[in-house]
Image (cartoon, rainbow, N blue to C red; front, side, top):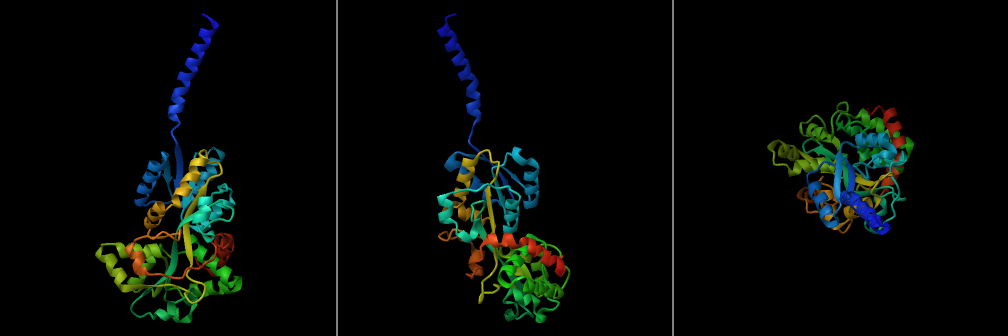
Length: 343
């Protein structure tokens, strides 16, 4: 066989061998998500339709996903981590799970208060931590601030989940930023002294306890209450009828808010696709799906979510404290709730 024929044959064999590899290289994004909302299905489908990038996802709790990533290390197939609390985002950053992203689209659309200054993570929706109180026997004026939870007038009336839960740690972290360590610890100790019962259950349990008259006031995230407001179940409607929402600290620094967000992982095998996904989450279309999926507000100011429960809750003054500050203050917040006995 002539040399030229051999060369052509080898080139053909190489081409045929490479063909299956190219066919297998479908654009993909591997997503680890702590979000479990039906509306996210449309979110992911629309991203794939717009970009051609297929999303493979694993869903679990924040802590489980972080532990999985720690165990996988550099061999992890994950590109993006989505989690639902500022403290957990900060913790993931501290153990080196994220890599910084420089994106003009993300920087232009997401306010600085809702993202890491170095681009390690970005918030895409936010909720408020409010006080839900009984309509009977509770004067709204006595539950108009977080400080009111430590007021002697609320002795035996306060309900809250564990102080070590990230939602409460983030609140304590914000108190630290505004009031300092000494005042925050004194507040936490008196809050514990004012409890109607030992902390147990989640935020929904606290709302139910208020409706049942077991507590006068409870600390909860707005989306738990919004779910009840949108429910068609008679028992949920009855709970809403017996309770009301108080927006804390509207005359001072504003009501504490927290975020759901995510970032590109340090060992992301599909970094370019991951950045595209984060930028998509900041788009008008995605902001509506992302926020409304859990009865939250979009972080992009120009986007309006048509959610009847959120509209009924009304406008409020949010605390402008940068979310990154909450993360930095979380370790000290944990020490305070431990010393206060808020278990």
